[in-house]
Length: 111
Image (cartoon, rainbow, N blue to C red; front, side, top):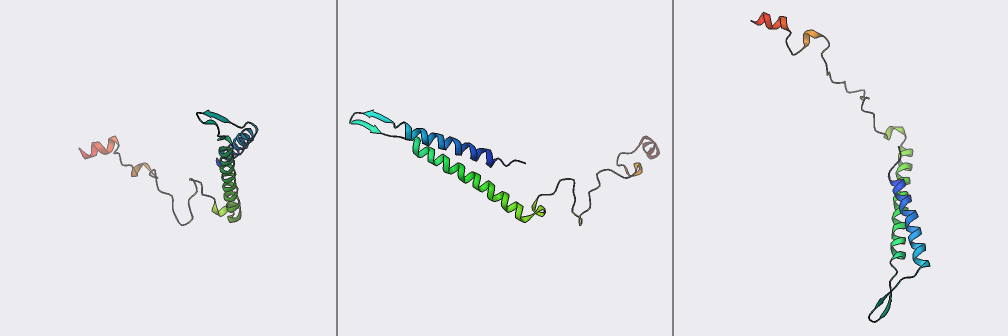
């Protein structure tokens, strides 16, 4: 099963790199009363998004390596599997005589 951290991490890696590259290529300046104010918010946010994506992918890979080192014993058991020391609960009676609801003939005997 695909870990959700991979696509999210790669998304932030790509978008962060594109945003930082765009910010370096197109410097922004805003006109204020005192003159132009250089504010290029694209570069720091691009770097932050890139680092967040790198951390997300790194954590997913670290978790994958940890699970591979522990082997198949670390994987959760399926719901249908029951450990050897436990018995399966009885959901249905083995015979009709053990049923909880009385049959028509049993109801007639009681009256």
